[in-house]
Image (cartoon, rainbow, N blue to C red; front, side):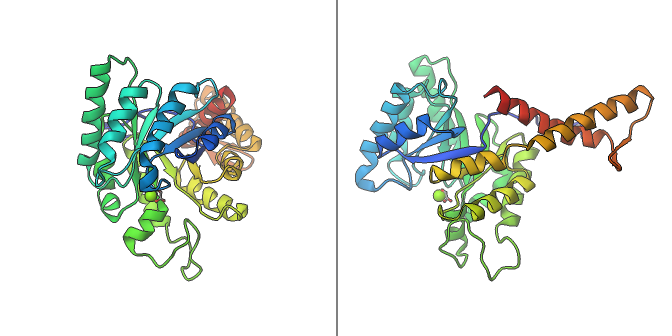
Length: 312
Ligand code: GLV
Ligand code: MG
């Protein structure tokens, strides 16, 4: 290992993250009782300009009225972008009126670290002024060419930043990629056209101790397509994916939970390595495959996740 290490800044179970338009209180109530790990109440792109003010009020009410933690959920609010005049009031009103109830703010279209600096400075002041003893976290959507070009710098922001999300829809738009299909594969591309970008974001996350989350898949009538996308993201190191429809929650929970056979194998890896260690050996074999200290680190990732799921 390098002498420089950036430990995980904040672990949270985030296999499924349901996007809920805050303009719709019935959907918020349903989300609170559903099987998702994470909910974000959206004030941004799912909300028409004429509904922005009411959506903000609904989000604040839902934060105050619903005990999200008791329901086993992490709750986040996606504020509007820094290029809009809604953003400052989203931060001020949500934080002043429910800042001790919301777990994180999700900041869209982050392009430079200064975007996070502004939000961080505002929440610092509001938490101090209100005397909150809680500390809201920040998550950033990487969904523009500028954000991706600066993703390594953004990941190093520090402060309250806990996670980066890959926003494939806005990213496609920003890149002028030839598609109008949210998160689906382009049949003209040999492979996954988002592979390099997701991978780049995940590297930045893991280098600087952040969670890496994959964004939306628009075709909610295609569960297999969703699961394939989720499996590709998981293979690269993402720990969860958005659900833009309640039917996608179970799919995400399934893909991002290690199956029993994987957990059993992880336990056996640790056992075999302990036995080898007792004999003064660093490496061992399991089912005809070599295992060593790196296998232990991979196995521990599986076991820590399995424990977090069991503890939910
Ligand atoms: C999410 O916000 C996206 O643009 O994909
Ligand atoms: Mg977006």
